[in-house]
Amino acid sequence: MSGPIVVDSVAALRAQIREWRRDGLTIAMVPTMGALHDGHISLVRIALERAARCVVSIFVNPRQFAPTEDLDKYPRQLARDLDRLREAGAHLAFTPSVAEMYRPGFATKISVGGPSSGLETDFRPTFFDGVATVVAKLFLQAAPDCAVFGEKDYQQLCVVRQLCGDLDLPVEIIGAPTVRDAHGLAMSSRNAYLGEAELAIARKLNAVLRQTAAELASGADEARITSDAAEALVRAGFRKVDYVAAREAVTLGSWRRDRNGRLLAAVWLGTTRLIDNVEIPSA
Ligand code: PAF
Image 1 (cartoon, rainbow, N blue to C red):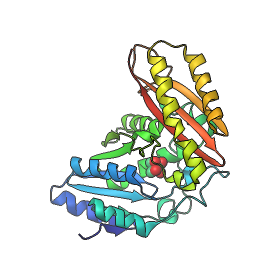
Image 2 (image 1 turned 135 degrees about the horizontal axis):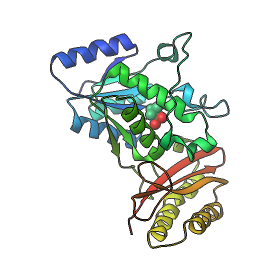
Image 3 (image 1 turned 90 degrees about the horizontal axis):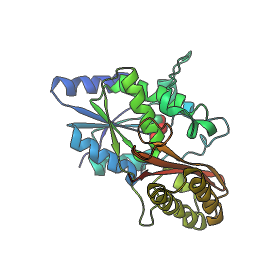
C-alpha cells in the first residue's frame, strides 16, 4: 500500500485539493498535532467513511501553548505518524513548518466566545484563541467538506462548532467517540509522558467520572457530587484537580437536568495534565 502524499506548503496542499475537486471528489480533514495514536486513527477511519479523500494535518501549533507549557517536549514522530497514516489509508498528510503557518508579521487572532468560556480557559486563557486561529487557517487552506474531531477534547469540539457556525465556514464538524484503553483511559499523545505507576492512577479518572455522572443523573446535588469527585481523584493519587464540572452538552453553559449534559474534568499527575469527559445520562 502506498503512503499518503506528503506536502508541507499551503501552495502544494491547494494544488492537490484543486486536482481532487476537478475530479469531483469530496474531502474530509483530520487536524492533529501528530504523535498519532489509535484515537487519531479512529478519526481517520471516520473521515474515510465520510469523503473520498482524507487529509490529515500534522502541526504542533505553538500558538495554543502558553510559555509555561510543554511545546518543546510535545512528542514529535513524523516517520511513525506517516506509517500509521499509510496503514489507515489516509490520502494526504499536510506537515507545514511554523514559518509556513505563521509568516513573518502574522498578526491575526480568532477569539471564540460562548463555549470557550470557563473550564479549560480558566486554566489556559489563550488556548482556544490558538486553536481557533489554526483551525480556521487549516479550513481555509484545505477547504474540506467535513472535519473530524475527537470528543476527548470536548470543549475544543464545541468551540470549533461555534467557530464554523459564527464565521459561516462551510465545513461539517463531526464529533467522534473517545477511544480508550482496556482500563478506560482516554487515548492522548500526552499519555506518553506517564510511567507505569502514573498510568495506573490515570486509569481511575474515567471510572470516577462515570460514577459521578450516574449519580448526577439520578438526582444527586451537583455542587456536592462534583466536589466529592474532585476529592476522590486526589485520594486516587492525582496531584491536583483543575475542575470537575457538569455542563449543558452544546453551549457548555450551566447544566440543567432536562438537557443533555456533559461532565468534564482536568487533572494533574506529576507534571502531566490530563482531561476527560463523559455524557451525563438524561434522567
Ligand atoms: O486537538 C488537537 O490536536 C489540536 O488542538 C488541533 C485541533 C489539531 C489544533 O492544533
